[in-house]
Length: 336
Length: 275
Image (cartoon, rainbow over all chains, first blue to last red; front, top):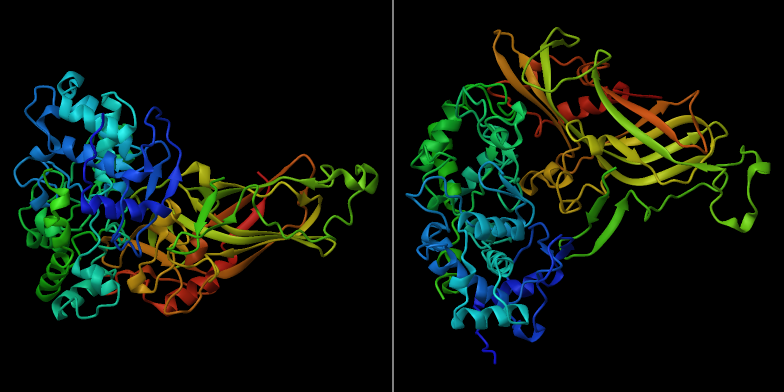
């Protein structure tokens, strides 16, 4: 016997948005597409201007899969000792980041990501990343998930009975694909609502999209990240740090993943080591503080970009216009 | 070769415009006129393996004739005496065409992305049916012609990372040539030679390389395309990097005169030869 779970509205919306998504190969197997009838309609997120979302052929996003993933995201039974879930550190009101736990990257638009964690220790698809989380970080004990309430969700999601770590990871990946932020005031401005930004925010936007401040080359596209690694001049001594700690190559020392700036107002503190508490401190750093090192990115001005007081204030105003309240408050992304 | 899947609209319509077996070659029917007809199989045998060959382009990037090493050092001198070094070399070429000694041409439309750091991008295997024969010129567009220079055309990295922000006009960088130079005050300053279309003006340009002495053979031919980086700074326009990259003029993405100058200097940047 199976029980149908009402799909979250946001999830349903995204499932539709994924309808035209490109498909990429994935080495993983096993998960079988569930009943397509589980996927209900409407109001797809407006992803105009976004790159196409890549969804592995063996893990299509479905309402039932998203429902299971959402449950697991918030369910402490995911962890080996039954004490923590993803949401223990990734708080929705903080754009699925955390103000006190060190080094927690926000879960925003990871569907478009191919490098995960600050140093890219995991790369590939969301399935790869979530498999690492389930089997590595949480060391999930499958027997904890073999509870009647969860077994029903697993069967609904994958079309047959069975609780496995791979299925848990795949369901989490499906839920992650619903964590889409695409409706900030900047998005509405970009879609043609010219009143969506005020004067300071518009001035800040032009600072952002200028070589004067050089934000846009790394915080690129509508994702506001290039998903690459850069040394922005935080430290003079970079040997063995950042991406270099993963690749072992000196050219990667001091390089860290570009975080998205979407909802950046809510993702403090900033940088891989949380060294800046406010956006003002971040902008001051870029204006005055970058230091040289063998791998300093060429886009960074030695000694800083020298922004004026007004430019700094405008830039911070623009960054705050990247806050997406619908994303932060969508109950369908919250605890089930 | 890195196949480029080109997304021609945000709505999901995809079209392959470059590389691989789906290529629309645009082969000139006269292109193999000088091939020994006795070597050809019967006319109904399909592609004539003896009269066509695989051409592969191999890209390299030099300063003063020597292979570059990427980094933040400044080991070179340009034409006006700027001490400089190279950290990034990334660019598109497009719509390659071979011109033969007999006047015929063979086209390989589409774009190819080159990144000095990504070895797989530094070879470009053209469709395997280039007519055999002596070459006169190798031609291509440096950058992207307007038809390909459309935001969203490249849906995945590394090509997509060349995006030129929509807020600045959209499309893609033709080139990111970045490095460091020593300014007039003796201090290091990073330069960013970012070229692209500006304000609706197309700054891509055709490169015509003398290929006299080179030929397409049935066994396959590798042509070495060299970008001589110091040439971006001279001939005909000498660039003093202090004028283009400083605290008040940090870059050239909004500098039409600089883009036009790169267009002029680019004519002598490339050479073609054999490995």
